[in-house]
Image 1 (spheres, rainbow, N blue to C red):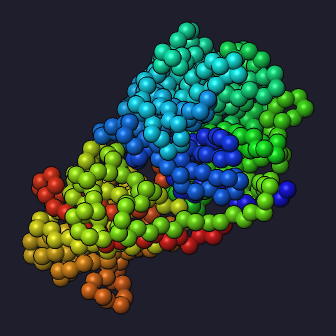
Image 2: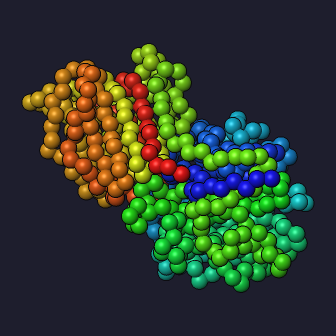
Image 3: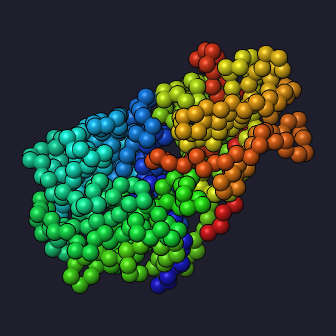
Length: 522
């Protein structure tokens, strides 16, 4: 046996709400994707040390057009029973208080890569669904319940449970309220486990920000009443302002063949102590069962750890692998994400020009419907990203280029466009908390392919361009403060896109390649 030292987080960049599952000798973690498609991203590991992208599950089952910022796919959960993978997830259509339109669905597949079934609608009473397969063959759906009557801003009112009939494909029988939550409030993310004589309910409390926590309770009867862990919360950074990992919560657990138990949970690494540009990430720690039957962190205390150990059957070393490259010579790399719409040949294909990605223009960069962009997660505080494109705009309303994009209220975009007096030009725009800025710099460029680059060094970033084999990069504007590209439920993305406000599909750009290289170390 070997103890492998690792550093958290194990999933860097925007990878929140982790749910872990072991099937045979494979470990899977599924994370929330919100408005980015395909949804419900899955990572795979053989040893809990190194994790690789495996698949995205929601490829044809959802329509997210028009969904609000920070809505859409919340807290997917995977489980396995009798040769089938089950996925339950929430599609949030509105978050405008006091209500929340959160619809829960279930799909199944024979393998983690599908094919996945059509969604079965479950309920809309709250978010964060979780399916528990009991030893007697019955299945139970748990979810947070939302009560619009509460006078608090967050209206989470505890955890409910109802039986799911696999044959009828619907919820049946009474709804049980099994946990009201504690004074930490904002109780959500329920996961149920059977260990020994008890059913253990693991929940998140305190909100997904600095007060985030993990609370555990238990019962010998599945429908309760549940006894609260007297030493809750069992994991939190709410009272640890000096911890490099903040916002620790939303946990799930797994047992290894070596008899060890591990907990995965979300965390953040705030840049300069205040801006989680990378979004909410996934960490792991070993947990133990105490003699009196409660779950505790093996290392003691209740705080998240940057450095920890994993017990493995073979020597292993944690490897950092955040680089990404696509030369668009064959199939589009699966790790790409699009915003609210799936990639299809109608706007994004490799057929229009050999060894290029042809992207047809969509709506504006702030659209909630047809935003034609491809993007990857920012996984490092220090990185550069480069793309080369060929684009011939005929109007100032036509644009294509490279962007840093958190959401429709917060982005930086350097792009090729057209100026009535100068012809084809490069410009830079910014939106910060909904306030738009068009920088005065206008750079005329001759016809031909253009390379665009962004260099990010922690809290600042700078855009560059290069054309016709130039040896040196030329700046586009001045260095930009990036701390505003943090907040909400997602992390920052680096993307390429084409936009046209004159006419739908009125122009197209051909991209030769896209490269991302991260400079952070483990």
